[in-house]
Length: 143
Length: 143
Length: 143
Length: 143
Image (cartoon, rainbow over all chains, first blue to last red; front, top):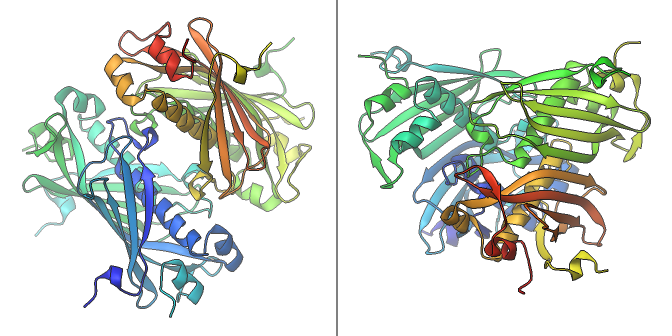
C-alpha cells in the first residue's frame, strides 16, 4: 500500500505569504479566503502542468468542483509564510479527488481541504471523462 | 421524529440577487463566492437575532468555523434571485451544526453547505460553551 | 444654467447596506471596496436601463473606465444604510463623465467618485461612439 | 530641479503576477482590483520600512487615504508579470502624495495612481503630523 504522495499523482507545492488583504475585520484569515487561496494553488498546479486558462478556452473543457470539505486546524497569522501542498488522491471515473493542505512554517497543518472535481464541457454543460492532457494537468505521472 | 425546521431552532431566510461581481472569468459563481454568500447570510441571521459585530466586540465572544462541507448541485446565473435558508441542526456540546441551502427561484437546490461551528473566546483563544444569548442568535426558540 | 440633475441625464439611486464583508482588518470600509460598491451601482444603473451583461455580450460593446477620481469625505460604519447616487454629467464625444456620490443616512456625503468612461468594442479593442442604446443605458432622457 | 526619484523619498518596487483571481467576468483586471493591488504594494512598502500592521496597532497610528486618482493606460493580461513602482512625491504638511505606477514587462505604463494620504490617529479619529517613524515607512531617506 502506498501513500498518495508515492502514488500515481505528483504533489505540487505553492508557497504563499499571508497578507493584510487576507484578513477579515477580526484579524483572521476567514473561511472564504482559504477557498480563494486553495483555488489560486490549483490554478498554479494546472497552469504549471500545461492546462491553464488559455488551454481551457481553446479546448472548451475546464475544471468543475462538485463537493468541498474544509477542516480548520490551526490559525495562521498576518505575514506568516505558508505552503499549500496539493495532490490528486485518485481519479477513478468521471470524478477525481484532490487534497490541499495549508502548512505553516513550522510544518503544522493549518487547514485541510478535499475537493471532488471533474472535467466540464463548457458548451454542452456536462461532465466528461478526463483527457490525457487534463490528467497530466492534475499531476498524473507520465506512463 | 421531527425535521430540523420543526425542531429547536428557527430557520432564517435571506434573499439575494446574484450580481456581476459574484461571477468569475468563466461567468460562473465560483466556489469561494458561495462561502462569502453563506457567511453574509450567517451575519444577517445572528445580527437579526441580537448578536452582531457590536455584541461580539462587547462580549469578546464570536463564532468560529471548524469544518465546512459544500455540495454544488445546480448552477446559478447572473441576475438570478436566490434565497439562502439557514437552520441550526443541533448544538449538543461545544460544537453545533448549521445547514445553509441556496435555493433558486424555481425552488431547486443550487448549493448546500454544512458548517460545524462553535463560540470562540477571542482573548483566551479557545472554544467555550454557548451562552443563552448566543443560542438565541443562532435561532434557538425561546423556552 | 442647469445643474446636472436637471440636465440631459437622469440620476439613479442605489440603496445599500454596509456589511461586515465590506470592512477591512481595521473595521473600515477600505478604498477598494468603495470602487466595488460604485461598480455595483453602475451595473444596476445600466441593467435597469436595458443594457446589462446580456446586452454587452450580444452587442460586443461594453463600458470601459479610463480615469477614476475618488474623494473620501466621511467614514461610513458597519450596518449603516447608504445610498449611491449616480448621474452622468456629460458625454460630448468618445468619452463621458459619471459622478457617483455615496450618501449617509443623514444625507452627508461619505465619498464622491468621478469616472471618465467610454464604450469599448470588445473584439476590435478600441473606443467607439456611444450608440443610442448605450446613451439610454447611462440615463440619457428620451428626446 | 530633481525628479521625485532623485528626491527625498526612495522608490519601492513590488513585482506581481496577474492571476485568474484578478480577472472579472470579461477577462479583464477590473478597476477595483487595481486599487487592491496598489494597496498590497503599499503594505509591502511600509512593512519593509518597519511600520506594518503590528506597528499600526502598537502606536494607534495608521495611514488614511483622502483622495485617489487612477488613470488606466494599457490593458494587462492574465499571467503577465507586472511591477508596481511606488514613490512618495512629497509630504509638506498633514498630507502627502504617493504615486504608484503599474508597469508591464515591456516597461510600458499600464496604470498610474496618485494617492493623497495622511497619518490617522485611530482613537482620536483625526489626522496627525507624520512621525519620523512614519516618514521612514513611506521611504524618506535618512537625514
